[in-house]
Amino acid sequence: MQTNSLILEVRPINHPVISKDKDSLPKKDQSVLQICGRASLEGEVKISGAKNSALAIMAGTLLCPQDCRLHNVPSLVDIKKMSQILCALGVKVERNGDILDINASDLGHSTAPYELVSQLRASFFAIGPLLARLGAVRIPLPGGCAIGARPVDLHVRGLQSLGAQVHIEHGMVNAYISGSGSKKLKGAKIYLDYPSVGATETLMMAATLAEGETTIENAAQEPEVADLANFCKAMGAKIDGAGTNKIIINGVPSLHSVEYSVIPDRIEAGTLLIAGAITQSEITLSPVRPDHLSAVIAKLRETGSQVIMEGTNRLRIVPDKIQAIDIETLPFPGFPTDMQAPFMALLTLSEGDSVITETVFENRLGHVPELSRMGADIRVKGNNAIVRGVPMLSGAPVMATDLRASAALVLAGLAAQGKTTIKGLHHLDRGYDNLEEKLRNLGANIKRVKEENESEPEETATAQSKIAIGQQ
Ligand code: UD1
Image (cartoon, rainbow, N blue to C red; front, top):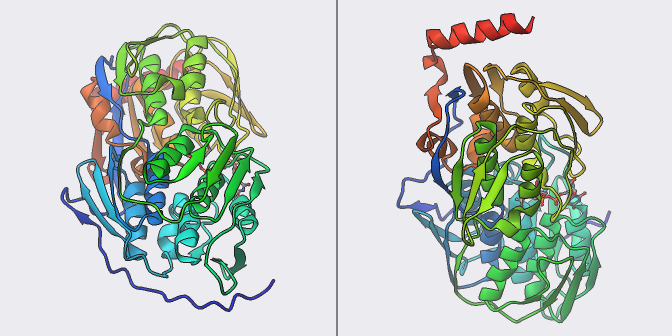
């Protein structure tokens, strides 16, 4: 492999995230969630801004040399990490409630810290805007994670199509635009072998400042891609077709200041719809975009629940006995992989056998052994989980293995008889904005306690031992 001789200055972290809501990054949380299951829920719950949109849009602010104000940004550890990464690149970030003010006018040639990029894959998406804006970028490879190897080959090949030199050495991706003329990427026709969300976002952002027209075929159609495109368009980018499988971007010389509101989180909404279904409770959610939830709503209806649209941005779930159904995860508009674990929790209590097939990530069934600890009957064969419905789950100590697995365990805990204790809450806090408070407000018996303070209420212990005897 050719060696990149370009030397980039490494700058220290010089712009801390200024926060008006004491929003500093938490230390590794040793707390556990305790849920006493089988409480009925009722009422209305507010859905926060979409994590995956907000993260991509934060990367997108690197394209703009002026002020960007983002509304409806969820309060999540992943957002804090992304803020820290932007700060390490010389960007000013200020948080006030759900508003993020970002100014990347002082963007310098710097390297995002490996420790942060390795914890937050979405930060790698910054490679596109940084390259477009600066003509050169050095960014650590994000590495794999609990749910799969997660390579970045599609990002790299797409940037090469746009005229970038890209070399990977010692775990670093060095990308630069060579030549003595203008340090601009060149519009190109790109075909993605797989409709990767991150690769589509990286390349769409990179192309906004390229010379000429770029076409991305077999693009990801996820609502978060369309949201990022709308954000870029609000800054003056010329993008057509985002949200379909063919996106056309005509490069512009520069982008300008913007104020933009992030879409509601469809995965949080889906998780809370399941909270209603699994506890047999009628609850209402808003704001939501029902068109972003079509597959999830269709599958919930197939299980027997009614999902009623009230106006344009409200959904009510009216549960019924849970019927077994089959699910296969697919790129949007197919059933989202991020809803696979939460839906599995629901189907553990169905009448009959369900087959869940994970096609997007190769290792995304880590929640199965934990659900089994709670009495679920699940067998895994390759990427298929065969879920045989049981009449009751029993509370147990369990460990969250990844973000969506942690949501599945919360849902199972809400329905289980007795007490469930969930460890590994740093996963949950990455992607759910105050989930336990939202559930508590609906009537759930859920609290976060320090691990050492954990003590088992007597009546719960009795309930659990009764179930254990009943299962023998
Ligand atoms: C995004 C979401 C994540 C969601 C996923 C799929 C963010 C921050 N995260 O992740 O919540 O689960 O979409 O909807 O938006 N792949 C390659 N080469 C690449 C890129 C991807 O082989 O260069 C593979 C991945 O390993 C995976 C599949 O493509 O098997 C889908 O990944 P991708 O759509 O890129 O997911 P992310 O953008 O990482």
